[in-house]
Structure formats: C-alpha cells, structure tokens
Amino acid sequence: MRKLYLILVLLVCSTLVIQGQDVERSAPDDWKGIVFGGRLMDRFLPMPETGEKTANTWGAKNVKPRYIDNGLEDNEWSYWGGNIQIDDNGTYHLFVCRWREDDPKGHNAWPRSEVVHAISENSIGPYKVSQIIGPGHNPEIQKLKSGGYFLYAFKFSNAYSYYSETLDGPWEKIEFTYDTRQRELEDHFSNNTFAKREDGSMLMVGRGGGIWLSETGLPPYKKITEGTVYPPYDGRYEDPVVWRTDIQYHLVVNDWLGRLAYYMRSKNGVDWKLDKGEAYLPGIAKHKDGTIEDWYKFERIKVLQDAYGRAFQANFAVLDTIKKQDKGSDNHSSKNISIPMTVGKRIALVNTEKIDKNTSEIKVLIKAEPGFNPHKDIDLKSLRFGASEEVDFGRGSKFLRKEKVGKDLFLYFEGKNNGLTDDNFVAKLLGSTKKKSLLFGFARLPWVTYVTPILSSKFPEFSLNAKSLKAEIEVENFGQVKSDVSEITIEYLENDTWHVFKKEKIPALKPYKKTTLTLWGKKMIERNKAIEVRVTIKGSNQKTTVLQGLVVVR
Image 1 (cartoon, rainbow, N blue to C red):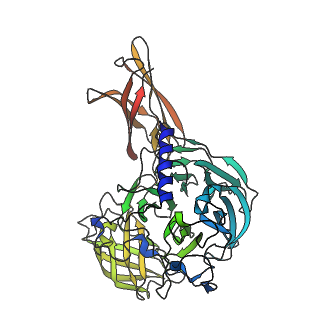
Image 2: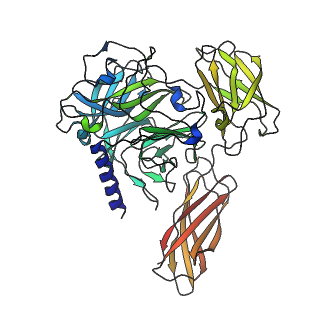
Image 3: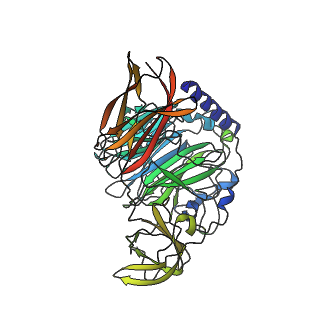
C-alpha cells in the first residue's frame, strides 16, 4: 500500500509539472498588518552587481539584461539546487546538479542529472565547475563531526549519497539507508535537508516534513516523528531547508504549486512553530536601482552560514519560464543564483527571572561586531522587543533607555506588551538602523531548556500465552543529554474507549542508547487481531510524546 501511495504521489507531481500548473495562493488573513522585518523575505538584500551586465545570453525578457557572473550558469548546462561550503582558505565550494541544456526533453531531462563541484573566490560567484561527483539530483553537502563530508542526492526517488575526507574528493558512493521505525513515510526521498546539532549529530527533515536523526551524520537515519511538521495550509510542499544558529533552528519549506514559501523555527529541531509572513516569493531578485530579475520559479533554497550559524546568503535554483516551456536547445534554462541576506544582530536577554505581563522592565544586551557600532548605528525609537507574534506586527515592548557597556550596549524596554508566553522559546528585537535598513535579532530565554532528552518508542510487539499477554517495546533516547527515569503507558482501543494495558518505568537512558521493556498484562485480546494502540511517554525533563497506530497480536 505504501509503495502504491508513493507511485501515485510521483504520478500526480509529474503530471502537474508537465502541465505547468501553478495557482495563486492568497496569504492567510492573520498575516495582514505585518511590518517590515516581520517576514523572512524582508531579509533579502539587493544583488551585487558583479561582472558584466548583458542581454546577450539565454532567458526570457523578464530576466534580461542581467549579471551572468552571479551564481552559476552557462549555455551548455541547466543547473539546479545545491549549497555552499567554505574551506579554511576562504574558498567557496558549491555542490549543484546539472543536465544538458540541449537534451531533447528540456527541463524534463532532470532525471539524468549529475552532481558537480564548482568553486568561487567569493560567495556570490561566478562559480566554475571543477569536478563531476556522480549521478544525482538536488544535492546537499554537510561537514560531519568526524571532519569528513557527507553529500546527499537522489535519483529516480532513490536516495544517493557520497562521502569524502575533503571537499576536493575523491568521492565514494555510499548507500543511503534509513529506518522508519514503524512510522509512515510521508513522501519520497527527493530533497532531504540536514542540520548539525549541538553535539555534532545530524538532524534531517524529509521532503514530506518528517524528522530523522543520525548520531554520526552518516546513514542510517532514524525517523522519530509521526506525520509532518509543515504548516497546516493547503500546499504542495517540497524544497525544505533546515539550519541551526547558536540560538535556534530554522526551516523554510516551499509550496511549489502556489510559488509561496513558509518559515518556521524550533528550539530543538523537532517541535516547530510557524512565523507568519512569506519566506520568499518570485520577485526577490532585486538590484540597488530597483530593477528586478523576474525569475518565474524560485526553488531549492539553501543558505550560507557564518560562524554563529546565521544565514548571510541564500542560493536558489531559478527558471525563467514554466518548466514545460523549457525545451532542449531553446532560449530557456535554469541556473543557481546568489542573494545576500541581512544578518541578525547578536543579542542576549539579561533578565534571568521568567518574563510575564507583570515584568516591569526588560534588559537586553546588543553586541558590537565588525561593521556594526550599536552606539551609533541604531534608530533607538524604532525598536520593539518581545514575542515574534507581537513585534512582527509593530507591537511589543517599547524602548526606554540605553546604557553603555564597553563596545556593546544595554537596551532597556518596558515590561508590558512583551507578549511572551510558554509557547515562546526566544524573544525578538526588531527595528531599523539610522540608515533605515533592517535591524533584528533573536535572544534565548534563560528559563527555557533547549537541549533535552528525546525518548521515542516503537510499537509494542504483543504475544499471547495461555494466561497472559506479553508486550515487548523498544525505547531509544535521541536527545543529546541523559534522560531521567520516565514513564511509559500502553493503551488499547476497545468499544471507542481507551483502556490502559500497562504502565511502566523507563530507566534513565544516555544519548542514543535504547532499552527493550517486557510488560505483562491480562489476556483480553485475541490472537491475530489488529488493535489500535497508543503509547505515551512522559518524563520530568522532556516533552510528552504519543505514538498511535494498529498492532497485530501474535
């Protein structure tokens, strides 16, 4: 049944791509009133004008003339996807896929794509291909805690992966293995995305929005969630990109049919909340003089990060027309494009006691950095601080006064209207500089625990004997810290009522360790009968998790 579902998904997606269907999505009503800086899209900066601006190149009128040295493009190949790594010498390495532009299938030749390695002396480009890695599509490369590099790609819905000790290779093709851990696979493996956790382990967001983990960063990846973490809107979601800063995790996912992307944040990479406002839309490729390279499609977003994990550049796969209109040996094609981004300021909340509606004053430290002097550069009257749900709409706590602390600055805000609740794990500073450019930053909340155990179970395996029912259940800690003794409850559904089969203690588990519990209960279920089971895990230092589904008694 699962294979049939995936085949149907692929057929539907392929049909829609071939037909070139796009729909116009209306922004949700509760997005109205967002101020500048409230949307991720507001962080995109004008594109640098590097190299020659020319109209003597491929592309529809809407993307000409343009600076062809931005990103990676040429007349022989169509390029798609890919992200960048920076080596110790400051050289930029872009790993991207390509297929022949003159292929008779045009854009639909992408299943024949190969992964290539391109190099530039700056982040914007131009990038020049230096080596061919091997077959694959939609690559993403990550540096492992071991020091080597893991490169993920896919081919005909099968995951590919490569490994190398260095960015320059040689590259070894390795099998991409995974363990669903009895959970449904939301979608095929066409564009997974990865972020390194605090301990060097790797978190993966699948195309369908499931969360997976690997202790080493190499396969196998293990699924720890049920369902998708994506927004609850109608959309054909793909193109996820996940990254982690020293403050929080970030996730962008694209609705390719509606050409609208969404932005989410998380304290741990597992539990996500949506920020209102568009993450990106067509039209973001702007220049300082206001002209726009009006690319029809922006897909496969990836971000380039600084030493603190902050995104300072986005790279996209862009196409100048509807995919079905890109034929072989014609005037249409695709490329990789670089767009710089405003970097968030480094801020910290000084208050140690939990902030609520009764807090009288909030104290925030904003740190100086090269190119940023907080004593001179900030439009202090523009500042708001508090929950994103408030400051993104021009509300939040108002600025009161400042205090110098060396090169850095203390900012004081009134306590009221901060909007912080138990749903918030960071606070946001939003305003502008004296030059009217965007200024923002996120601060952790001192009373929130960010790194916790993540206990996750499989379904129990039931077996009957003459007098009793035995259940064996595996529990594993996917968190980065040791768990406390926790409690697991197994329930079964009968006559529309949940009944407790057994409660049991789970011993403390170190990170990535697992245990198998054997539980005995009274005989109340027939052999070979499928029953609805619910497994709940509760712990003092972790979020309660629930796993529910059908189990057959043996």
